[in-house]
Image (cartoon, rainbow, N blue to C red; front, side, top):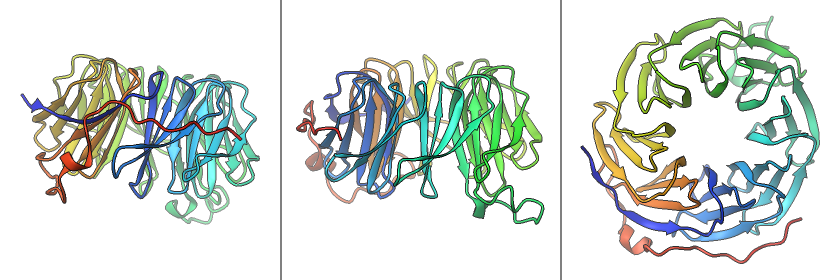
Length: 373
């Protein structure tokens, strides 16, 4: 059994649960989106809150952080873009008619999914909707994008993949592959008997992996629509997926994580010790970090499956994890962002400087509110 992890800092300024946590590509900032209708930017250098993003009229469902801009989506049916230096709202994207569930920024395009049964693509700078992807019979939950340069250049496919392919998963039990340039449905991936809750893409192999409430994971060829294989050993909904080094990690309501060979569907490892559903996964430097409905985060040796450390302190479910350097960040429905020391775990490089000097264990990282655009 692993030992306990020590908290470096507890940031409890949000007045509602944190639904998502995003790390910038350069690793300098974190973004949290909350049930309180706000988002906050945090510095990874010192753990301080550097901006409060206010303007949404309902809770923030999801957030995405780039190096120079932050994006949030909300139950108020809108998406917002923010300046990461000033915290000012730069753009409001309007058009969805229900809760916006997920957003994704890629290839200078903003993709979104919604309870209104559509996905959409927007011009990032102009704020205008470019395409609407309509065809799902129920809520669109998850989205992934494959850029045109990641797709094969066969003459018969060139026009179809010219703008890349968007993959969406829905509570109607299907995933769909869309041609971004035309807005047409390229393939409908049928086989699940429950809602599609999560998906990841293997872009070099043009393969999608989908996880569902039917307790299975399925692998699909997104060009042909063929179902390649089914992963069947979970006993509850598959909530989250991570694809690393030709391995698929799946977190489930059955309180386990399973590791599978992506190319064959063979299960090679099961990670136990969770007392509730596994709600979040993050692989980092040979360690698999998990978040659970039991309010704990855990660190496992990814190769052996050994539990190395348990991080206790949250009061409710952990919704998201990020790792940067020697620090694990956990965001929970209890409204707190917690920072944990992960030195000493297998595969982690030696610390460059003392973490105890970098962070203090005090609660609260206040920032002056900024006005919405």
